[in-house]
Each structure stands twice: as structure tokens, then as C-alpha cells.
Length: 170
Length: 267
Image (tube, rainbow over all chains, first blue to last red; front, side, top):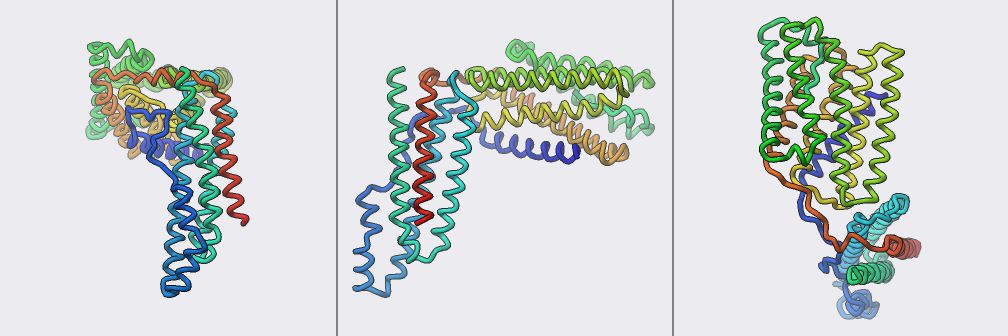
């Protein structure tokens, strides 16, 4: 039993060491927003998911309707990916900022790590759902995906604002 | 630092086998000597006293073992196990130093991690004392050595994960110490485990494998500890902030996002 445990431990440690060594860098990312990740504006999102366009294509060019829906599904998947990128960046900012703080609480950090993992699992579930659904069903999810992305974006902005004000005070 | 299994070494008779034992042994000792020499020239000894004390102790004891093995092989067995405990104990000093230097500017994590190291070491010291008094010392020290390596590997694994998770900055020197020492520990732990499972006959092919890992670790140290590369100091503006505000905001981000995704999924 101990033999199995130590072997697993050795393999795990070697894998982590290798991954760390390959990505090793002496530059630290700062606790500020990189600005490279942006969600599409409300106007664009509303236009993409509008029923009017769908009805228009259905009436004027029914042969393009399925292609139109497929394209919308792809756009929704892109939106989901951006949403994930925003969450990952938000959490990276959090980790970078709190890692130097004396008052950091390991219990709170563990809880946040759990929240983060839950988010990633839910995100994978949502992505799979969109991916396996047919374009018509996926279209009904569009508005919900955009709302969720917007929620995250707003919350992330608050986090960035906190960081900015704290840095300014210091 | 080399772990010589006395049971095997004493049984070696042929000249080829002797060469197979002596060459990697001498190569490792030569690299350690080189490392110590470079550290004295470049002042690395002062920056990483725990690591270089360990390296010096190991090199000295290995030379002693080498002498005893060559000229007085009968005493090698007892000498090996007694000196091995010193080496393993000094190894914990290296782990302690690695933790201290890595988390030097990361106060909260450092306090927590040092507490864990102290607790684990105390438990193992008690275990060793009990087994030394009541049990077969040679047998217990072999199991103890594997367990201590396992504990060190666990601690270093936790540290490396913390480094990745929090984006902790390291200089090249400390990076090399952790990488080489981690490789050395893992190879020794795996060898002790396989030796226990497969028996002494496996030693014939296990030993070169482990020796290769030791030489690789020494080479990593030679490359990364050739010049002084101190740990970068993080941005001073990030040193203080209200942690509770941060934690609450981040928790809100995830709570809102989770709720939004749940609404999406249940729609």
C-alpha cells in the first residue's frame, strides 16, 4: 500500500516539476487587468441574438437558415470562451494581489479555489450543452449565455476597480 | 548525497561491477566538489547556507564512506545507516530553507507552510527515536528514510503548486535547487520503494537509474548555480491591501457567474 502511494506521489511530483520547469519564467504578471479580454458590446450581442434577423433570413432566404443558426451557435461558443477567459483573468488578478498580503486567510483561499473549480465545471457543462444541442435549441440559450457573460463582466469590472483604487491609495 | 545500498555493494566482486559503482560515484562527488568550489568563489554559500551545508556534509560523508568501502568494507554497513540519518535530517534543513526563501515576501503563506514543516518533522523525529530504541535500527532507518523522502516530496509538491498557483517569482538559483533536489528526492524515494517491492535483485538495474538521476540533479545545480541569480522582489505596491475586500469581491464574481450559468442551464 505504501509502495503504491509513494510511486503515485513520485510520478505526480515529477509531472508537476516538469510542467513547472517548462513554464518557468522570472517575470511576474501584475495584479492588474491586461485589457486584452473584452466581451462583445451589448448592441452587437443583441443584434446577433435578435429574433428579427432569424425571421428575416427564414422568410427571405430559407436555404441559409440552418447555416445562419450554425453560425450563431459558433458565436455563442466564442462568447462562452470569452466569459471563461474573463473569469480566469479575474481570479489570476485576485491570486496575484493577495499572495503578498500578511492578512491572507488560507481557509478563505481554499473556499475561493473551490468556487473557481465549480465555475470551471459548470462552464464545461454549459459548453457541452451548447455544443451537443442542435442550432435551434442552441439559439434559445443565446440570450442566457450573454446575460451570464454580462454578469461576469460587471463583477470583474468591480474587482478591477477595487484593485485600481487600492493601488492608488498605496 | 548518493545512497549506496551496502547489501549490494558488499556482494559486488567483478572488476566491471566495481567500475560500474565507482565511476558514477566519483562523477557525482566531482560535481559536488565543483559546486562547493563555485559557491565559495561566488558567495552563493552565504545566500543558500542550508543547501551548501547539506552538500558539504554529503560530500564529506560520501568521501568517508568511499574510504571505508574501499579499505574496510566490513564496517561499511553500520557506517552507511548512521551517516544516512544525518544526510536525511540535513535534507529537511534544505526543504526548510527552500520554503523560507521562496515565500520570503509572501508572509501569510510562509507562516502557514513553516508550521506544517515543523509539525511533520517533529512527528518523524519522535517516530525515529521510538524505532531506534525498540526496533531493528537498520531496518527502521530504511523505512524511515523512504517515509522522510515521501514527506519532503509532499512538502515540495505543495510548495511547487503554491508557486504555480500564486505566480510566485523565483530566481534561477532557487529554481535550480528545487528542481534538482526534487529530482534527487523522487529518484531515491522511487528506488527505495522498488527495492522493497522487487527485492535486492532489482538493485542491479535500479542503481544505475538512480545514479543517473543524481548526476542529472548535480548537473542542474551546476547550470543554475554557476552565477548568482537572486529571487526577484515583487512590486512593492502590491504589498499591502485589504484582503477581506479582495476576497469578498472575488467571491461575488464567482457567485454571480455561477448563478448566471445555473439560470442558463435550467432554462
